Length: 472
Picture 1 (cartoon, rainbow, N blue to C red):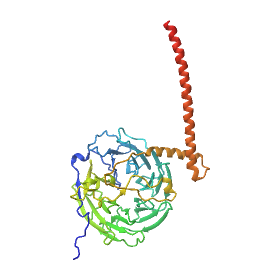
Picture 2 (picture 1 turned 90 degrees about the horizontal axis):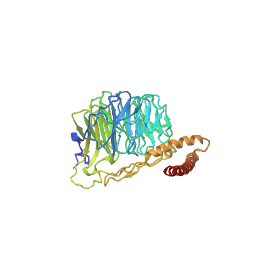
Picture 3 (picture 1 turned 120 degrees about the vertical axis):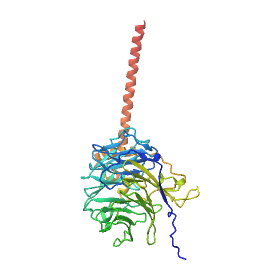
Picture 4 (picture 1 turned 90 degrees about the vertical axis):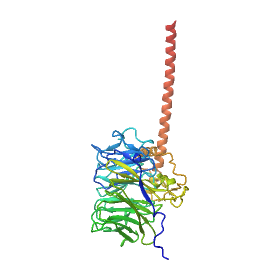
């Protein structure tokens, strides 16, 4: 007998919105007409772009700070124009980057327990775009590598540690870039553009690996993301304005591997992908549902699983990394759905009777440790994500990055003075020179302190003599 129903452990995945007291209420979610998610989440914080007068701002709330959020709650407010996109660093849960209409990218270090006062001083400001910056995405495996894309049709890849633009891709996109996605080890990027093309680019060689024109015939915005096997999944619109989901093999992009047509709604579909389980979640802007599909290796490749539907439409959506989930409750995804005035977590669960750890649902997942330093990646090295087990739940380690960022910026200034040294030993000699200078500074300080102590001793003796005379 041929099996009629395909077997899958995700067939019965169900979504559930949390109770009202676990939502984040009274938040003025941004009304900017830009198709980003407006929300970024990690195991410590949820960040939400909000309406702000006279500039751009976003809220950063510790996950446990649910309930009504006071209007006076501190914000991150250094941009002079509306914030369009935000992204948490995958290697440090306290570092977040933001792109704005003011053409700048800013990187922020959030205090361990969240904000106590509004923050307007970023760790570093990255200036290089000539028009608004609408896309921000961190490198998945290299520390301090950040990609930004602006409405000047440029992609810039930054070394955040030194504050420098290392790679600028200028002439590859003739029109506005809708989204950019790294592949699993960060060696390639794929982009969706307003000219209806999907491109695969090697950013370090600045070369186009493959391109597919008119991936979707419709004029509305597309999205393209890499899957863990190197294929590309795109969402877009047909000529008849039906929403589509397509799968492409990067080796041959002439024809899609499969195309699924869904409905005729006009909201842009934001895809969220879980590389561990090969499940893709599609959240349409303005929709009130989340559809999810399983991707398999054999035809028809894309299998519809189910739809989570609510009454309220979503303004944006945050997606929790795997290490922030509750493995004891068989939670395989958690979304943070933005309404007009609140943020509502939605939990996706696989129903299981056993209380034991489910190995098949939680294969080892990408951990917070980078596989490479920024310099190694720019030199051409690649590193696969460093995986961690979720068996006993994820325990966040101590974050230690800010000092490195500041030190690197100083290193950069020091190395600029030693411009004539070779690149290989430039950073080394700069660091050495810096530590020698530091040592000298400390010795000077010790000497001045000793002098101060001895002069104060003399003064004390003098005053004691005067006192004795007065007492007599």
